[in-house]
Length: 385
Image (cartoon, rainbow, N blue to C red):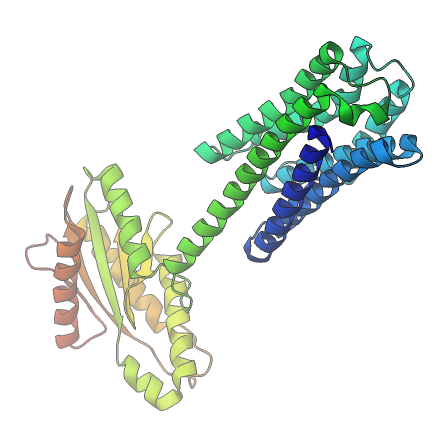
């Protein structure tokens, strides 16, 4: 068996392995359709390796040659489609069909021409290059700008350019006088070895982009409270610290909120009613605190609101608005006329201040409000009104 035939078998196995991996990734990724397109594209493209072997060893090599060309083109189009979905770029189905049929038409134009002609390789490889470079352009034009996205675009550019390099190599080295002779040429060895490297490179980059996205989604879930829909304590503290690091020279304020007599609501009306109160309270705070506020559920019935570039007096006014808003909430599962109340503690967070210390100060103010009769707003000691 020739070295080129071995490379064909290896490339087929690599394509199948990546296809299987993307099938698994599609189960967990929010970009399920894109992952399935990558799975299908790599599977279809890998079939060209079998078609190349069919050209060399089977009857009717012309049909196998057409299959070899068509499977690569179809696989690349599916990969392009998946990239477009992943990067939210338009890629209509009619466009995919047009590319495929135009590429097949180009193949039929050159199939009977001398294979050593310089133009043969460029017409043959041109559609492959255009599809791959178009996919790279979609990544470059997307709003995503991470290092991984840029790396994927560069790998796609290299992959698209390699088709043009192979067209040149075919003219210099000779692709064989007939399709059947291709597998025994030195050009086939070089071509398939380059293809092996680029299959792995593109597959790994696409897999990395999807995997990082899955990790980001899981991190978001780990930092979000499922009941209220707000950030949990970890997510709240991370979001606040990011703001402090970025805009630490500004005066900020912190509000702690705690539902009054929450245990009695659970004991009297059931935990489902208590859950509805938590959900309604979180929704109300998020809506009333303002677009620039960071809101989180940091304990059982305890919530926190971070207000950027806000004076203490304004923070007290926001807390009073929230206190009134709690009283007007309509909670399914609670009897008509039942009023939910909450207590509030407000403190200043000085420029470059310590969040943990501010939380402690706000907590002291909150418990002062609890001891003062609940359903009220108290400020931390020494905070200007």
